[in-house]
Length: 590
Image (tube, rainbow, N blue to C red; front, side):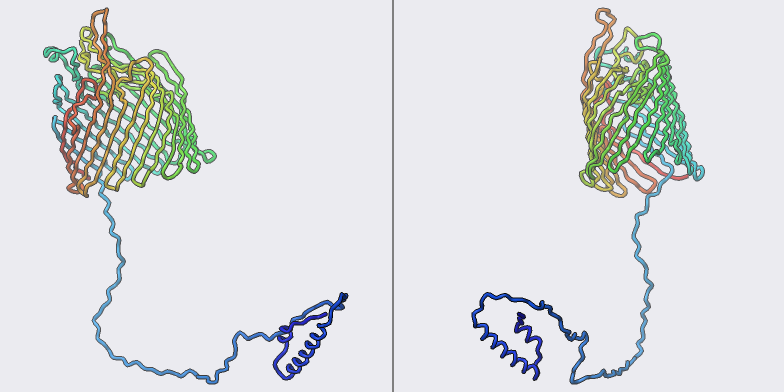
């Protein structure tokens, strides 16, 4: 049975005359169907002869552009116009445009030469002269002369305490496309006095007058270095120094080092070659008698592999040394680790650590540069640093605040330490034997230390650095780690006040140290009396102020030990009190 809806039928009819007849016929059909539908419907079987297959009629498509049916169609009217022109006199002349320029600060002029001269109380004199002469486009000749002296005058000192230090250095440098090299020669003269007499036993004025505490140090040196830019042989340097003093001590020291580099499988392999040779002699011994000679030849090789991976830097190396003591016919082999690593965790933190060791050759020159009051009877030996293990972290807390913190532990054999010589009158009559000089003591020392540092860069005109380090020592044979401080600290600041004014200051602290006061007595039953002495820690404040008149001339004032702390850097050796020094610096070109 096929069923049509009224909606489908109505949509298929149009409203014309034919359609009206169809509607009338359809109405009669539906009415008869309703009458027929009133009969009861029983259970019947319906068989569909033909399945329902609807079709879609064609429909007329609405045009995209409909036709206009306006009753009035107005056409465009042509508009005609004219301009009434009146000439106007004008005196305006346009100017050419010009781009705005950015004001740039003129870089400061760099001069090749300068001279500095200053004078202060205690008859202090500071003088410096530097000159860099350009021979041609690649060669330069340099001259550097420095002098620092004082006529002394420390309160309470009974002996002369003046000093001076003068050095002259001549250098020649050449820079080519493939390499650069430098040679230098120089000489140095230093004068110091053993003025640190002990209070006990007290000396009479007559005894003091018989003491000549003056000691002179001399040294001459020659050296050179070379660097190749495109070669597996990277760089090398060598230096020879001869030094001596007023007591006929002499020393020859030759130190040469070279570095080779090679890239293998995108990894950098470096090898350092080391030759450190020293020989010398002391004309006398502290307790009288003949002096002695010393001679050491140290040769080392240090290969290493540098690995760079994103934020990781790893250096894997090892050092092998052979040391020959020719005076005692003794030789030793040493093996040291050379491992360092650093990992950048973030912009704020980089962790690092390592374990390193090495053989350090001590020299008489290095000792009297560090402590000029040593006696000319020292023992010279190399120091064997078995290992120095450390871990730390560094980075920046803000853009202007940086930090560095490190914890380390080291083991050293034959570590050199200064200890006061005994008062030995009656045994020897030398001018350094009144308890006013120092000897070298060697011992096996383990050291634990903690180091911290802060760097503040407020702006381009102000910088501040503060650091401190704590030490804890463990000795094998000696009762104390002589003259080694438990705590050191320093604070340094520089401030550019204006374009012409500048200033700076630094304050450092050195903690307590231990030394040994000894008196040699000729009584054989009690040959020596010992007393451990503690030296107080001290602060030292220094500052400077300068003014630049122009690019070439500037004046300065320096103040040292402004806290007027008459501290003892070494036992019985007080330093000068408040010191002021004023001078000027002049820069120029030939």
